[in-house]
Length: 214
Image (cartoon, rainbow, N blue to C red; front, side, top):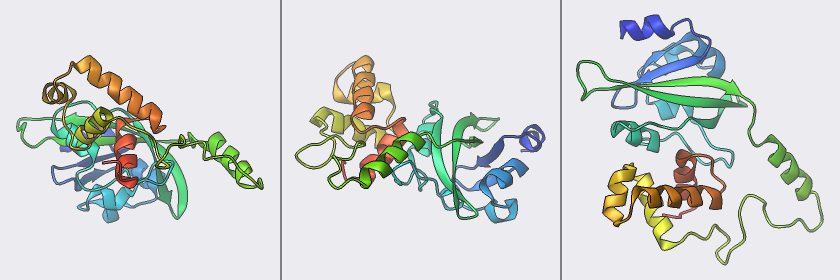
């Protein structure tokens, strides 16, 4: 822990660390600047309560036992992702990268998140939506492809893959469970992301829970 403090205390990127219970055990000065939350208010609290991040549709990304927590728990890499947070009641976009630090006790890894403020990745899309909303007869929402149930049309196998993602099942275990190759699993994930216009597996799972796809 002392090494962690020494490495990240003065970095310009926001850095916070979590224990196995997803409680904040380290919070540097840059986190306070980026998120507007003092360390005294963050330390010891569950990360999802402190961050409260959502995706561009407003779907919660931060929640107890989220996909990031499950994925790191399996020792797998987590793709960086964008999340919207509130800094003093003002929406701010940050990009999140994740590291897993395993010391002498592999059973108790430390999860480290690195934050960097970024621009809204959907700013242009939002402006188009705002313009369309002013039309007398706006076309269907650009973000969701039309279908009979007003949502993305996923195949049964894609729903099974999405359900496995939500449970934090690793790709190779998913392939074994569904009786297909890992390449096929990656192809299904790619199709799922495209259909629901998600940019990461984390965002896809969040969207699925919000829209009752699982």
